Length: 211
Image (cartoon, rainbow, N blue to C red; front, side, top):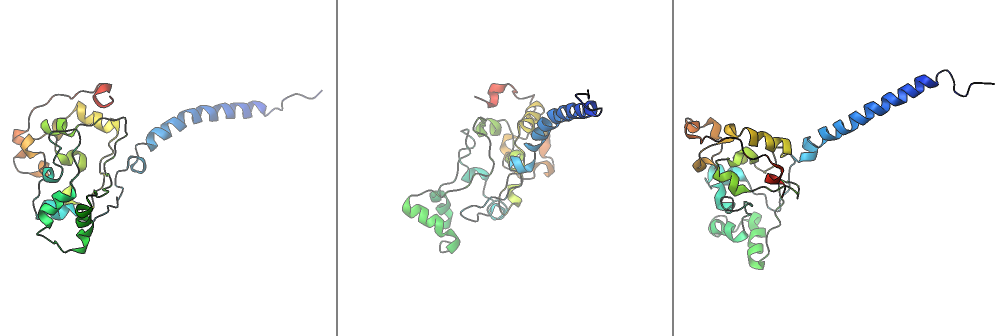
């Protein structure tokens, strides 16, 4: 009577067991690595906006403070999106006939907001408070990068939980005087770090960001 299993069956079985073990480890590790890549986090994605707003011109050339457009950043969780009326405070006099600004004029005339596209995206289950960070001296560029050098703003940080926790555990290198929160290139500003407030670790409990 012939054997039920061939002589090579043990090798095949051991190979299958090894593949299952490797797969059981490799798949979760691969997925954990994937969600941290720019393809998944959105970092470096070029976002098309309804109007070609150039931050370089407005921030560097015109010297407009971040808080003029993002008016709620110091007092609420959301930084706020500039209304069309706010844009027209300047553009009723400057480039008031430019065809590029026609969507802004139409928005005001029709009382219809411009559909700006969010750049820095966090999951719905993550709570982030702009005012809490700004009041403690966390600069805009820490999270948003050098927007004064961007013709088109894009996400530059991964905004993963690990990235946020790293900052919360060791915030000193990201801190600056609250009066300098909108200063771009703060780290390279001569003498700027002499008055950075001393801060210990920030809260890292789950309920800090997941509420």
